[in-house]
Image (cartoon, one colour):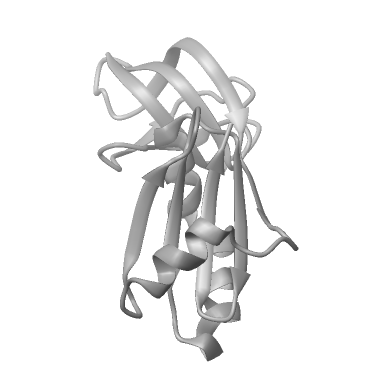
Length: 152
């Protein structure tokens, strides 16, 4: 049995494919217990005998989806100050009050829109949210500063 947080990378009526949010191992489920692509499952899975190449969900603690969106709001003052204090290409992380984190990226000014698009399309964004146990990711940006807010 394996306990953890899993992101559903593919799903149809018959089966689903999970990626462990911690070790990134892939697990194919023998049956789909109602999961959809992009869902997050916190629980336990178990390999099915005799060959143990497919898995079954044996315990579900929590199942949810992660919303990833671009906000029209600019980065906070703290995010702008953090970005100004670091070189282009650097990332800083700080905890939020309560649950979650904020990641501040300093990017070339003319690359801000491309950086936002990459973050919105990256499966890793959802995996990080799953590891943090949050259901919402908000991306804020303005000229050379991108703030990724992982929110409950």
